[in-house]
Picture 1 (cartoon, rainbow, N blue to C red):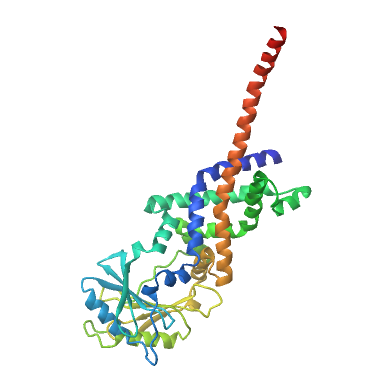
Picture 2: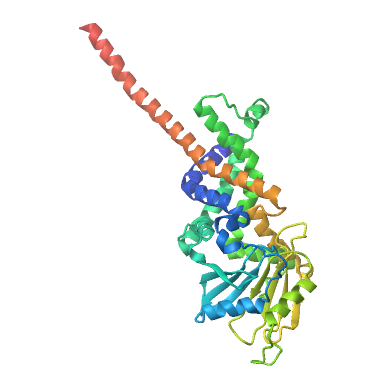
Length: 391
């Protein structure tokens, strides 16, 4: 019974691994690149993100920066504004045409001079392409289906791999250590089995949380489990002020009020609605929180900038708080730099597993074929020797 179970596990591990290996390799490798996206983005695109801080000068009001961008791009709508908490960072305006928010033009503005320092199409940026490859293999819905199936297969591969790895008393040391001085075949097996065992808990958790983006029912299951009901749709409330009676300095007023109500450091994002009847949504990350992805929301009237309502993280449902944990767990940003380094190492090792696994499979297949050839040649060889002796 035990041998049969292991044989089934072995076949599942082999053929699911061969089927999904390339996808797992791509997803793990791109995932390792995305771990430090936040840190690498201003390094790779320095002109877009970084400015020189002038002495004894405060940032200009947000309305001045908004007016500069609106004047430079009159045919496009400003949909988002991102303000970083660091003084040497630009303010990024996200522009769209109509309702097509997939093709976003990012416009960077110097907050001290209102000068446009750089622009880029988000669809053409390095990390956007890496993310598309990570989630969709750059194949949109078809790619999403492939990565989703491969993710489920990989979860089964890890479970069957643990079954195959599980040692008896004599094998424990061998299964927990890598014999670096061994021949290539043994070393490759150790790299696959031993490294695979050590990263399994982390890789399993990363793959499991990845299902949230692949399958809507997984996302819904979080809310049903912790809240007892599906996710509630969140919409910005309607404006209460008089339409077309906008006061001057509205964005500056909203920024100041946001920092007063939420004094902790963190990235602020304005979401400006297409409709005049809806309010402005403000989100602010709490960088003082013990875990990542703690975000508070405020809603302001876009006509006169007065506060309409709040949606604070502390008041969120348990389901929403658990759902917010999914992203930092998946990316390794849960507890900052230590967990990011761990996620990077885990992702890189995970990317090697399909490679070492294929090498093991090819080696065994070659060995079996070699045995078959020897067996088929052996009778012929004996007969030839006998014939020579007789003559």
